[in-house]
Amino acid sequence: MQAYTLKPYTYRHKMNQNENPFGYPEDLKAIVLERVAQADWARYPSFTLDTLREALAAHNGVRREMVLVGNGSNELIYVTLAATLRTGDHVVIPVPTFSVYGLLARVFGAHVHEIPMPPETNFALPVDAVIETAQRHQARVVVLCTPNNPTGTAYAPADVERVAAESGALVLIDEAYREFADQDFTPLLERYDNVVLLRTFSKAMAMGGLRVGYAITNEALARELHKAQLPYALNLFSETAALVAIEHFESHFRPLIERLKAERERLIPALNALPGLHAYPSAANFVLARFDRPAREIFEALLNRAGILIRDVSGYPLLAGHLRISLGTPEENDLLVQTLAEILGAA
Image (tube, rainbow, N blue to C red; front, side, top):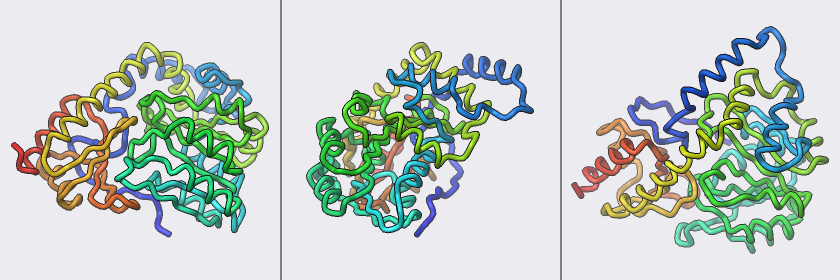
């Protein structure tokens, strides 16, 4: 088993971790700093995080008791699997996807069944195979990431609902990139008691460095998941920044999300106009591209020529020759296309 890690690189343009390139707005930083400065740092943060959970409940149209807050959504992946899995249990995961799901499932002694989503299908969810495998092995958990990382695919809502209805498993739906897609799986919680939704402040709300994630599920399951969580999941600073982000979501973050979506729709055709690559459709804040030349060669050329760091995902299942490009600022995206044109001989 290999640990999840990223090799450090020296770069000028960071386009490898699907972060928000516009950052947390400066005027909101000032509000956060003022509030934190007035707080008592000697005291432990809130044990139950009721204020943040109440704000998240209102933001998502659910009840506070359905919300669980964690130190990044990665912690909540860990908590959900820790509370659910026993040695020898079965987990179903469509691949390629975020590798932490399978890594943690194996840490807990589970058998992981990977269901392939080939590039020639545009990485569509093989819903029949997922359900059949889950039923045959009496799987405890099915993990779905939509929009999926690293492919950018948004699964059809009807397919996701079929998995919830027919798999017989707990369905963990990672919605880290939901703000960039026209999807909302919250209504599933009204119809099924085996669904956990994971959401994060790291992507759309530019808080990757502050580690704030949350889960939404039915109240009974939320209580059980909380039992597997260490106390004081969030520090004072992160909680405050999250509250400020929610308060100013429509005024500050919605416009940034729309700018990134516009950049995505501009970047994909620009990439596809270059020779020797194919950029797939994306519903996230990144684009997956397949190259005719070795992916590592392109990766290193971008880094060496222009200091552009992207993500080499060619080692993922079914992704030989593929690289993942996080959306940057308009200037960074233009530089990326220009540099790729030079590398590929189109300039």
